[in-house]
Amino acid sequence: MTRPIRTLFFFVSAALLALAFWLSYSDLAPLGRNTSAYGDLVNSITVPQRHITDAVTAVNFDIRGFDTLGEEFILFASVLGVVLLMRRRSDDPMGDHEDKARGRIVPYPSDAVRVTALLLLSPMVLFGLYIVSHGQLTPGGGFQGGVVLSTAPLLFYLASTYPQFRAVTPPRLIEAAEAVGASAYIFIGGVCMALGGQFLENVLPLGKTGTLVSGGTVALIDLGVGLEVSAGFVLMMLVYLEELMEAKEQ
Amino acid sequence: MIAILEAGILIFVALAGTAVVLTRDAVAQAIVVSFYGLLLGIMFFVFQAPDVALSQITVGAVALPLMILLALARVKKHENDQTD
Amino acid sequence: MSYLPYAVAAWLFIIGLYGVITSRNLVHLCICVSVIQSSSYVLLLAIGYRTGRPAPVYADIPAGTPAVDPVVQALMLTDVVVEVTVMALLLALAVQVHKRLGTLDPDRLRKLRG
Image (cartoon, rainbow over all chains, first blue to last red):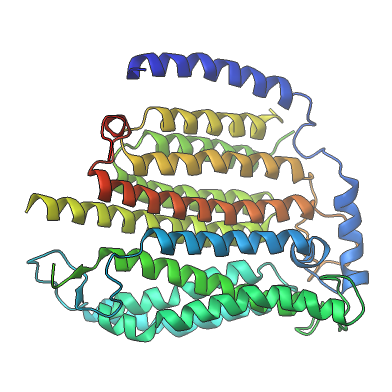
């Protein structure tokens, strides 16, 4: 099928698709007037029954915790897929690699870049840990804090050279951290079963609403998910950066 | 009746999505995608969804353009190696 | 006018699909797939929103006040995670295609058999 015929076929199909969208969306209520009994029920029970003030985290990790288990394993499997796809033919992790084009003289990062990156490094780590640990109190949680944490090694890479960056982020340690974070979710579910409840049921002491120690299993699951997401993203960036490297023997 | 702020941000999102598709050069598109991710984050904030806004800003404005630029740098480097 | 978010969701889907079909660069194609995915965010957001109610975070409002639907927002969170995983795998595949076949043009890919 040549390109003009394909484009013409697309326009005809797009018109039919727009008609289908119009017919189906006109049955929905206008913006702001949908009703949902499940949502209102969840809103009314998160604070009295679970002592959690962030309803979205309560839905994610407690009320529908089993679905989030599947979501974490989607992330884990995708990091695994990217690592497998980008694997170099010669397994030489610490060979003589240069992160520049052949024959180009790259200057050392300027002082302004280095000072800014190194000044932002510790507040970034602190902020990421804050978002991960306060998941059940304020908007945030394991996933958001994990992504913020994973940008800290990249700031370090901006301020230094590639061998120094590789020295700070050993791949074995990051792979181990990601595996520990992913299996912590299942381990906590097993602990709930051992304590007499069902898999991932919130049977730990619920604590006082509004403090860090509240919500039972949600606080622990947040930490495990934060570890897994940050390690997974750092590993993905390592693999993408590694793909750029030029081995000296080539 | 829909409020002015909500209608405005929705129209901005539609225009930015069109701009992402109509930018054919991949490097320029990475920057436009970052701006689009930020605009989506603002839309989530206006519609009272702060958790999702945090997620979208960290992922769509930082991690996604980073991956796109790294993939493009790899492709460019391979092309330079082949023409040497 | 109150059906504007649904129209925006349909428009983003169609324009993203147009970008996928008329693309000349595999990386541009991957980014248009992400635009198609963002149309589902707008749709879910519009379904969950309630006029005049605050966000479902009870840190400083009294417990039990009616708020925006939190279940749909949890669905949106999963959606964002799925988007970044799909994009990572698609970009890795595009890089491998370029490594093996030397081109990023979808039209030329049909002629080259590796």
